[in-house]
Image 1 (cartoon, rainbow, N blue to C red):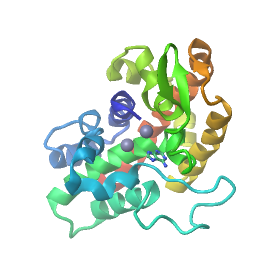
Image 2: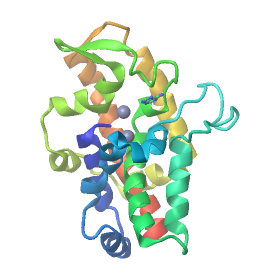
Image 3: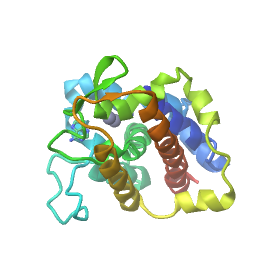
Image 4: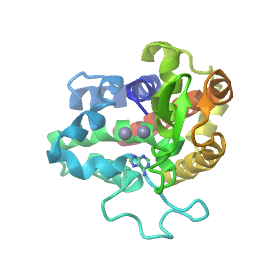
Length: 236
Ligand code: ADE
Ligand code: ZN
Ligand code: ZN
């Protein structure tokens, strides 16, 4: 996602944290909120010292295979990245500095996991190579899903987070069910539909948003709830 999408996920997660998790996280992040730290992993992308984390933002594997049936990328990917973050955060021997770093990365990656095209095809870089028009401007399918639809409303991340569905406990529990790989497959299934939703060069606008913004909204909400689930299990 772009900045707003990540901030929405962080903001929603805050509201599902236990008091204990909130305290422990506030200590590590020195009071910075989850929305604030959610874009850190993008901010360090341009810094060569952090180049190794570039491939952690996405994962590409065949749509008709399970993750791991093909050899996962040696450079790392979203699945391996999330595993590493959780491992560092759970370890009693990690430094506070490392924990702060990997917590900020985890907040970001759980967000990216829920952007369907971050679990897309490698050949087109998750839709980055699929050029389309967004209203009158040139864009690509990945960008439409990362940010164009979200930014269209010019709503702040807090407005968007407050605009989430009022969910019953049962609905929250259904969203919390499963693990990181289950959620990856869910995103990949959505990615199949996203690829089928537009042709190269197509002009996308109101109708596209009307059809697909509900999916964006649902994915952001799931991202927030599931991030809180993971953080509560580590810090709660
Ligand atoms: N960004 C760059 N490469 C990507 C890929 N293969 N999938 C998703 N996002 C990407
Ligand atoms: Zn993206
Ligand atoms: Zn990212």
